[in-house]
Length: 273
Image 1 (cartoon, helix red, strand yellow):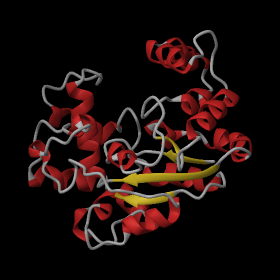
Image 2 (image 1 turned 135 degrees about the vertical axis):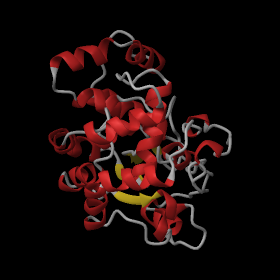
Image 3 (image 1 turned 90 degrees about the horizontal axis):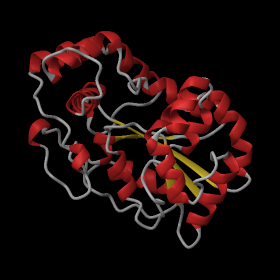
């Protein structure tokens, strides 16, 4: 049985990637956060996660309303969902940040039951972070007094985002060090017709991939198209000026350098980053 783990990155067309795997079973939702919940070591954070409405609703949907899920439960759920399909998927974006000790400790158990493929899709760090900030600000999740999305974004350039998802190379390397073979995808390359990125993905996953569109590329900001099932990709509600983009690009320079050093960089859509 094949388990495809999508390990982020949020706001980089992860949902489009999942929809592209239409011979696979995506379970009851895109993100069930089971592995993430199991990986939490901080007791207060773990208690908050386990007692949240989202976790309780998920457990009830899966038929586990009277207990906290275990790794054995995860395996049972995903084995059941894999039957009759080319693979089962777990596209929880928080899989990106699973700590290395959890990745190592759970690997043997998971590999006893699944042929595991790990994909990570990356987008221009400035554009992705601006989309994340737009969602957090407009959803009321951001703890800030800033008057606009752009002001909040400028604040985050100094403080780092709440999700820390911009640390592409760090999390990618955690999966590698843990003994997996994560497959990096540059979003802009994947949606560049003359690139070989789609074929490379098919070769890695060994399942059909019927590329579903994304509203994130070509980059259109507030004018991004409305695509069925992708309302979340209509995240940008303000526009970065050229000067603002260049300022942000300089502030995040170290992330671009780290990405390039780790092979996480466009090969086809060269000017997209």
